[in-house]
Image 1 (cartoon, rainbow, N blue to C red):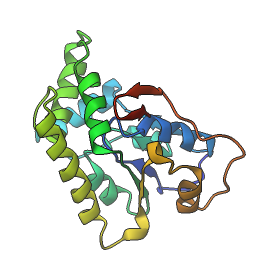
Image 2: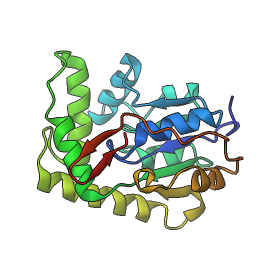
Image 3: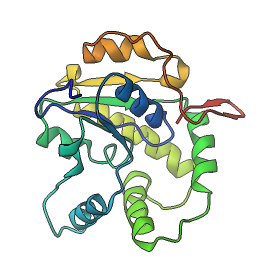
Image 4: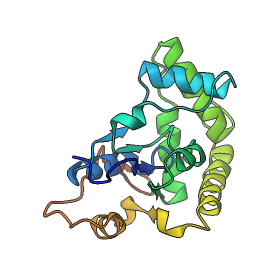
Length: 203
């Protein structure tokens, strides 16, 4: 069900580990055909060629879905806002210390062994964090830079941007108000909930 209509899309542009997967599930419950973390072969090829300067920006998978969350949308919010000027953007935020703890755990995990997939992940990480492996200082600075970059980009069109901290309790009310849709009679979906030293993990 496309509640957005036409070329109006919803893009979740928070960094990974800021409840982007929970946002994806919430959008699905609202009737949007939503995709979390696009990494299919076509997307990988399109973006790797774009990053290398070999072709113009294209994200074909965005034509197939009403909403996309997580990277690469977080990295490409400027390009997406140009291609889909009527779209709405959601910046998921999180307590910075909790986010860093989560990233340290996640980015320390084993590699998949898929060379093309890992090259794609590394290309995105280099552009978002300036490195492919976790470093608390660099990731912390990258979080701040990303938030300020998004705010700066949408400063002239604030109605197109929602900032929301799902892990702190921002949920159906603000999301549904932003999307102009009724609040569902169901709990907000919290995906992959874990516990870390500073609080709970909402992916």
